[in-house]
Image 1 (cartoon, rainbow, N blue to C red):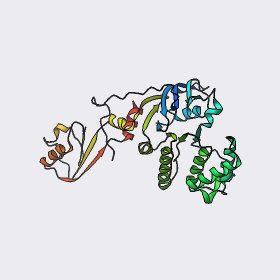
Image 2: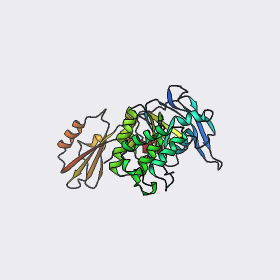
Image 3: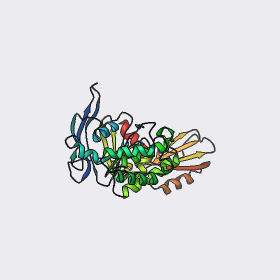
Image 4: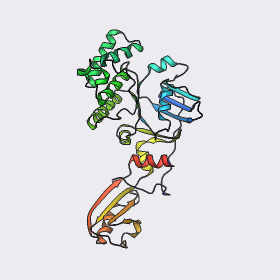
Length: 327
């Protein structure tokens, strides 16, 4: 059960938006990046952020917020209207070849020849980056082993399961061993077991030093994997901070009291907590920094309620995300 805190509470701390700078030590630097399509649609409105080398960073936002547009500009798949995008100091436009070699992209869509074999997909992609035949064979073998695709090396792409197709896209992005990996919805449509496998694999890559930029609809994925998170909405960065600071933005916990029957009137012992009653359920929301859970439990006991059970929950990253994108 999720907490349903008062999102506009006057005690909600103000969250600052970090400003990116052109820093050669940053893996990715985005400065005042804009994108307006020929139709007049403004996809990006001067977004600014930077990602440190070796960081696991998430870019969250609802559909149409500008996430994929930003990624397409970073990887050279779309032209910017204004601003700068740098990869380890290399401009993605002026230094296209050098910048493109620094990044591997795992796209949302399966943009692979449906009739091509797994090993051939990787072999040809390695050739795009100038890898020799021995280098390609060596890396293909290692990636297929790491991603549990060895038995599928001669299988056509169209014959793979959804999870295996995702794994192949990841292997393709890594074939030239780039220092930056961009994951655009990397676990969409996969089963729970495969998702957990991929999470562990991404953590391993990050521990080895790869900078990872993740966009995902699974907010628990960002909460599980990433150190810092940026929230983008309608082409603007509305928040950027460490995961812990984002969660503190709406620091609330909830006690839900399930009663044997509706009581009609809130006991005086609980009135100071402004509980909400609906049928035979009472909900109490509180700030753990200001109110002790034990104090509330003592008040519940003193009220002698006809209790069935008590459930507790706390603010999640999803609560914060919904709050920021609504506002």
